Image (tube, rainbow, N blue to C red; front, side, top):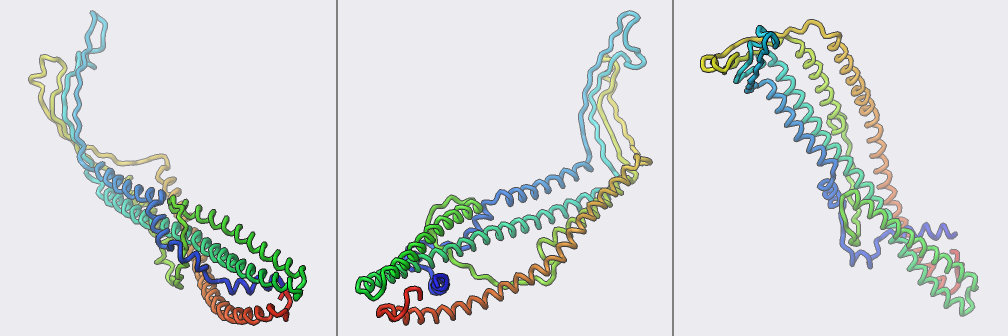
Length: 382
């Protein structure tokens, strides 16, 4: 009977204690989510990766721009009688001051593919930002809703304890008049004390949960808030390809395909030009007339690399297989998960309506029993 009493009391005590609600500030889920997003080091890290990706893309482009260098050298190779370096090799010394320039001419496809890969990486990181934000929202929402549950439970047991205190006082008066036995009074008193312990335990859990929520949001706030229960909209995305989590698989696939094409392009013939101008002399007294310049072309045709290209293609193919497995698993499980969650929300909404109707009936039942208790027409357990 005590369990039955607690059950019906729970239905009655579902409202927030007015004494708490009137004096505490209200905190919403959106406020915590916005704070978590603003303070999240994970999101800041991804934003930093996006900036690094932009810099890396620019660095790749500069590789194909003209490279200009200045080289200076002063080398003397003296001889000591019949000993010293062979003059045919050293010319007795080298004195040079040359500005040189070189540039790769042919790999325009490499340039385009590198830009394409950088673009896919940027888009993949942008999706990663949205995914990280989604996971953060989910984590904060879970903690917030748990606090709402604990808050409602604490409010119920506090109100239930207040009710039991009132009934205990009434029963004490009736016991003194001999209408009820002293054992009945102590039975209800034990029940009231049990409710009081439950209130204390819930307050401890509530304090711990609020601390965990503040930590997840990067907040240091000890203010006592009332947590407003958020409105939950039913949402179902039928096209899995439009989901944030699925888009990352698509960009990763495009990126791997581009890396395969880039690997092939790196084995095309490479043509580059070079030019230099300055001073090249073997003796200091010849420097004044050793000004000159040179021009030339370099051609590099890969012939054999020890099967390195083939092994790299196999490595990329393995990465694509792993990516494909995750994509297929995500698509298969998402539909079942979303359908199940929507059904749970619909069933929960129906249950809430049933409990509200039952709450009204129990309230009327308690009014009647309270009047009967005052004259000793019902038992204390009832």
